[in-house]
Image (cartoon, rainbow, N blue to C red; front, side, top):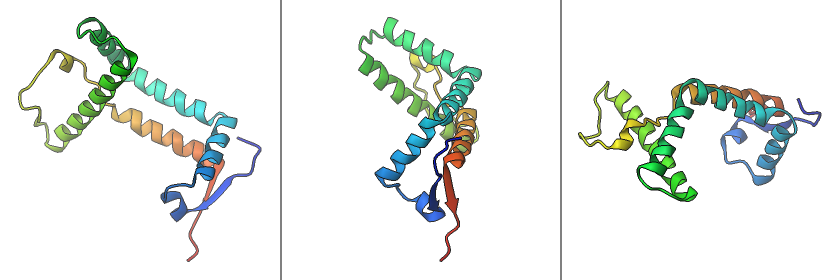
Length: 143
């Protein structure tokens, strides 16, 4: 834990967009201790454990070798679009109780499911809250 004074705010202030100076203070507090490293380690562990990182690596190889993508910005754009698409498709599939909404369209890149695993978001969020609690103090509104 950092030796600095905790950042204090009310619950309603914590729900609003934080002013830049407060946000920077939070970042600085997380960086001064192990907060950012702990968050990063949790996310890295969960992505490795679920196979997400291996699938991501395979998809990038596919983009380079099969689809001829040759620049980093294009790889980044394609990966980001695929993660968003696959994650949304997984949510829609869950909402429709197993009915896939892909309309029968398929491509070779569909062999790589880059839906962000639920455990990554759940465990990541738990760690973020835990680390924020170390550097922030949220008080109850007294109105």
